[in-house]
View 1 (tube, helix red, strand yellow):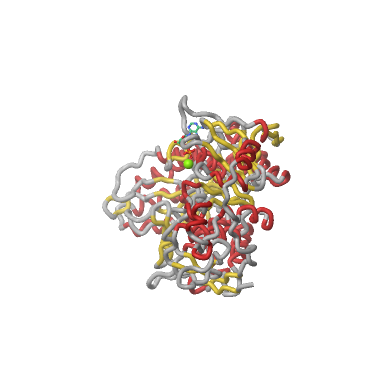
View 2 (spheres, rainbow, N blue to C red; view 1 turned 60 degrees about the vertical axis):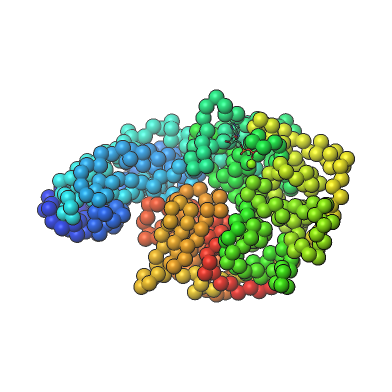
Length: 575
Ligand code: ADP
Ligand code: MG
């Protein structure tokens, strides 16, 4: 498509003023405005539909971004997230003007506290910026408002660009901080891997959030900054921040204990969020966890398809075998067992578990219960009898919040206790208590983990079509996906960080169906291939090709979505 100038755009808008809304379709194309390029990719069908999709492309000459803020990878991503937030914020404040339906609505889906690759705004190595947003093209009734459209496209949008990513719009110190902090967080995660650690929490980090629905840091005089227990202290040298001191979480089995309301779950939640990076000022910039750490919880009612839960759940009432277990309606314990086996299948490095969201009978069976209910009548092998084996035989560590069951002291490598939001290491003391007060319970695992079966999804069972439409995929709220005729509930998948990520996951399922599933590839093979496509082609491999509302996700969240699809069918090959 040829590049047309701003004058032609104004002439076009004048000429369609007062015409039917469909005349806006003529806006599709490329327009040069004040040295940048405006692309109209998609024009909404009517003023009440989802606003039109637009892009701005500006070269490095026009943004003036210094090259060290645009180095591909962590730096460019940090810079891009900062610019996207600024653009989205300025767009929210834009005067909407008059008009029917969503006229004048201007918005970008910018990242929140998280920092990750995002399609809303991208920074190229040459300092060029591509930004994607939506604009409700203005209408009176269903008629084009040409002059108002000219105000939006030729004044409001360029003003937004000037105020955010064009030369003079950005503050170098602010951008530098975003780029450097993000680079440091990645370096910190790499350092964890080198030292064999699971996670790191920097001295002074702010862990509590404002609420369950507000991910910003809790503020006020009552907030207690993180204090490093001396015995777990270490210092890691970062490329920009220099030496950073904090708590290293060692591999193996780590318990987080302490009284109710003393901050146990808050620490675990910070660790589970630490698989991704956070913006400067978040409080968790240097709270970092290995990428492969997966939060596990009970989720009764979910579907499970062909999962080998036998390490945790033996033969069920009625003689039902569990090496290929399927149910449309899992119990607390079977859902938690399935979540662990699915995480292992997807290549988890660590499991993060909170007693608050666990099934008690999955976690523990104490001495008295062992005496009352004989082993032969209890299908469950509780997690306590598998957690050491997971580390010794499968190199999968566990961090576990337990305030309730002291039986776990027997299986812990490290015990941390929270007191008034301050952690201390009490491993020695815990050992002494365990030695002095034996529980008398006997280990119940019947044998080692059997080899993981291969699960091969049937392509036809992952079906995004609905009626005559080949692909119909939508989000329902912030925690569920409408996928064809199915609904996938991800409200129990806590490590999904944003709606943009959820949308990308939903589109990745479509991609999996269209390009990857072949009736031969196993679940981990499918995950490998989808992630490889994203690495090669970027987020534009998903959706329409230039959507602005997608964010990168981990293989584990994609696996979680696939595993919760109720129509999923798999071929199970026992090994
Ligand atoms: P637990 O799991 O031990 O019962 P939580 O982690 O749920 O405790 O924390 C209880 C409350 O204390 C929550 O409202 C949380 O936001 C708050 N909180 C946690 N850590 C801190 C902290 N460091 N400073 C201030 N408040 C905190
Ligand atoms: Mg708790």
